[in-house]
Amino acid sequence: MLKLKLTDYSKIAERYDQNPFRQREVQYDKDIEEYISKTAKPSYNILDLACGTGLYLNKQVDNFTVGRINWHGLDASEEMLKKAKEKITEVSFTHGFAEDMPYTSNTFDFISNNYAFHHFTKKEEAIDEIHRVLIKGGMYKLHNISIHDMRQWWVYHYFPSAYEEDLKRYWDKNHIFNELVKRGFEVDLKIGYRMEEVKVADYMVYADNRDISVLTLINDDEYRKGLEKMKVDIKSNPNMRIVNEFAEMFCLAKKL
Image (cartoon, rainbow, N blue to C red; front, side):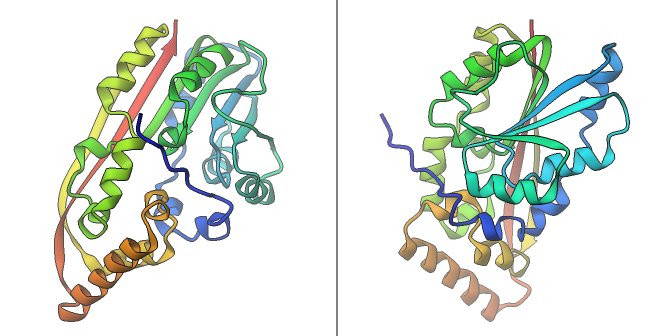
């Protein structure tokens, strides 16, 4: 069995929100809006699983005007939760783990899980728990990068050992689909993909910040070598561009 390295979020919690991609990427969740529009209930319990510093929840709380929603956030990092609590007071935050959630069965109408499933060390148990705490007809939304469809990601270009680490952490789309179906979910899974040329200099801020989880898992020598290679490339040609692939998985699973 491959040994799974774990990102120590206590070390990156302070700089996590400094990644400009995270600020831009978080959007109003129209899947929650659609779910509410199709159900008639006096209130809804919604959980952000592995909520981190609360960026996603902050966006939803600020923008949702439909339905009466009880917002919840669960995360394994107390340091990340501390940052989340500084942002939002309208959310019930809990320290805990996906494979052993401290909630009673049939509690949640909707569970969001953004860019975090790969961190779960016991993925099968986590899916069991997701199924357990969802109500019948409730929705689980998994949103993540799809590393098997983006071998030419800029991160892997400059930090090649990162891909080997990610292969240990990420399930491919077929595996995720089959495990959800096996547990009694109706699954709709899509991959959004793009290939483009990107300017290397535009990505230095992400590499320098070293808050992308896989960059915390490669050893320091490999990280420094990759960072130096980026700097050399930019110095030799400030407008240097490389091919970059990016793929996202959008998975909606309804508990039958």
